[in-house]
Image (tube, one colour):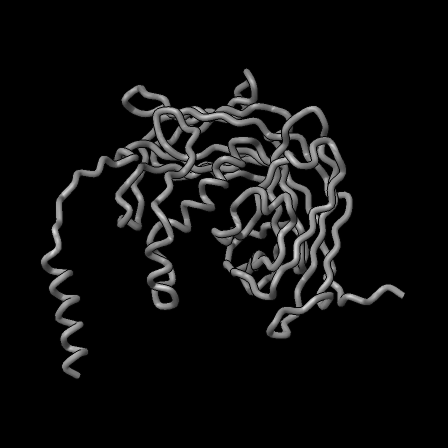
Length: 317
């Protein structure tokens, strides 16, 4: 007992007599600046959220005052809105087309303009998608799921993608989206991106390893998922399992890469499960932004999907 008290005393002496020094940290983001967040895609109504940068402990957000908003497709204005109290605008999907550049202009009461732009990439369709379970098993006896997606990468350009595996199910007025993303063995293309240590719900990648070729991306997953409840379906269709392949812009790719790291380096999370691992995971990483005179993201994607019946694996005869 005496030995135990001795070591406890030593620890307290070290903690309370160690040297400390105050330092001034310069904020990366200025508070009270315009901010916007929006992803656009052809054929889908796209929402652009508007606000102001605010302290991290402010959970309510700050309202952005504006006079006019314009959306341009190339040199043609296709959308306008005049109202300084809305905190979001909805861009009709029929205004958005692939292989076109879109610019958003937000005019503020003081005469300044907040702007951003991105181009909607060409759609790359899924050639084939398959899912099986029970082909292999984990050490605990749990069944693995084997998913594969085949697509053909357009030649003569660098292309970027996002792959998502979901289950979608209607519950009364809400929809449950289950992201299946707990990886046992990842495809080499996904491994090369270096994101798996951050446990992403979706997987972004470039065509560096298969440019201009047809490629089959394979993933071996462990049972389990992360679930969210939403009001609008991610896929317009009946309940089921969907494999989604998004053709994304370089801006979208850069943002998603930064978000995957940013959300896992905030010194917040499951403190009850892994307190030390959570607070020591790494330094906070700033989010990618492509907004002029403000902060945020305005990025484009184009998506194809397949509804997949995940079947029990049968050994070929």
